[in-house]
Each structure stands twice: as C-alpha cells, then as structure tokens.
Length: 256
Image (cartoon, rainbow, N blue to C red; front, top):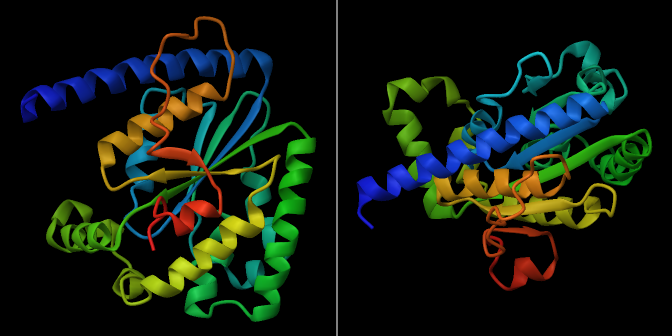
C-alpha cells in the first residue's frame, strides 16, 4: 500500500470510529454515565493529537477537555486533588484530562517541585481518591502514551522548527531528554503503585501517531456496551495497547 492509499485508509478508519464515538455519547447522555479519561505520557507523546481526534465531532456541551496550568499560591495551600474536583464529570459527560493529578508522580517528582513527603503521600492517596470516584459512579480510563527516546527527540525538534506548534513549547521541554532516565524511574513507580482494579493503567505504544490514535479510540469503545455498537469492529492491537503489567518494563514493551 502506497503512502497516499495508507493515508486514505487511516482517514476512513478514523471517520468510522468517530461515528461510533458519537453513538456512544448518545448512550452516555441517555444513561447519565460519568466518564473521566486521563491521558499521561512524556512530553511530545501525542496527548494533544489523540484527545483532538476523540472530541472532534462530539457534543461540546457534554464533552470537556481539561488541561490545567501551574498551580496558584492558593492551590499549593489546598488539598492536592482539590483543583481537579470542579472539573470532574457530571452525569452524561465525558471529561478528558490532558495531564492530571499524576503531575505529582511525573514532572513534579523529577524536577523537584514537590517534597519526598508530598510524593509519598500522593502515591498512597491517589488510589484511594480514584476508588472513591469509582464508587460514586465515575468510570475512570487511564492511558499512558509511551514513546521512545529517539521519537521524543524528533518530535521536540519538530516543535521548535514548526511555527504552528510554538504554543506547545515550554521550559520543561528543554529538560525532557536530559532527564529521560529519571522520568523512566518515576513512570515505572507511578504505574506500579497506582494500577488498580477500579482504575487500571492502559499503556499505548505511541511512536506511530496515527496508529496510536486509532487504537486508543478502539480501546475506548470496547469499554462500553450500547445500542448500535459495531460488534465486528476491529479490536485494538494488543501489541500497541495493553493493560499495564510490570513485566512490560523488563520485556521491552514499555520504553526504557
């Protein structure tokens, strides 16, 4: 298959998946389901693009994307999870977090923006907080987009060179590759300590952006049963999307 044909096949597959997402949303609104989708990953792992394809044709009244900035002085004096609580989904809503409270287990840990005590408390309380949300009817889907060191370098360079992607640049980007190993250690600890039955981590191998996006949507659709669902639709590729297991770190399924 040539490049043009492959691009068209990808475009058609995305269109079909987005049609089914619209059908799923009708079901979620009718049944008043609360859905929270968390996207985490290294800088340039593809969170923005994946979220964009999910929400592109969904109702803006029942769909929200949340990407919080730096915590304010008041935030820093509040309960750590407090600033995310107002953004949690109500009945019939899908809320997508482009980064989340897991900042504490990633960039805050690596860059020294939190103390050891705050970090340890987070890893202990995050599963309890998510268990409470699940108990109160929130469906929590957590995706970790995993990319290789080589791919991250390429994408960060592309950001610097492309004037349309300047908004994505941040001071943290400059340290992303320098602290690659530190981020790997923090990621492994986060996944191991916060992967639970009520809020498990799904790992997405995301070096290929288009394949990652399609497979995230396929996985998302498998989590719900609704009228009109295409039972014959392709399932996500298990080599690209899979539930976290600590063995994935040692067998190379997750980048070192």
